[in-house]
Image 1 (cartoon, rainbow, N blue to C red):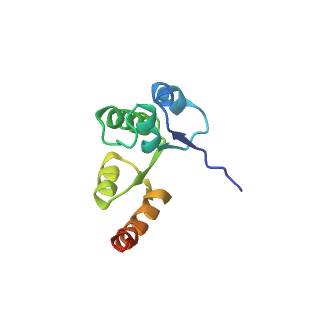
Image 2 (image 1 turned 180 degrees about the horizontal axis):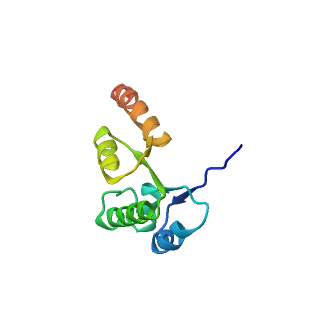
Image 3 (image 1 turned 90 degrees about the vertical axis):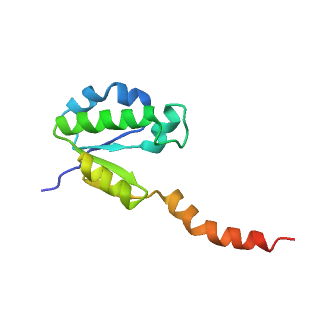
Length: 117
């Protein structure tokens, strides 16, 4: 029988503030941490290690796990993978498309920049 997997992305401050209600909703299977978008919502764009953002991510993770929900997140390094697993995250996406493109294009971009006249 077909079954739908319902994953809720937590990507703004308002969702963090209402996380208990969100985790209590019937049918929610997983809560996915949108750290980059959360950093924007907390006024520190790109600063995913900012204390406000980390505190929000930890709060969401703890609430989701306590409610019996799985937690997903993006990891940008093997150290982040290990840290996420230690916190109970079991659905891990490797980097974002933008991070992978940036990583792939920065070396040749720097090389070409050396040859500009």
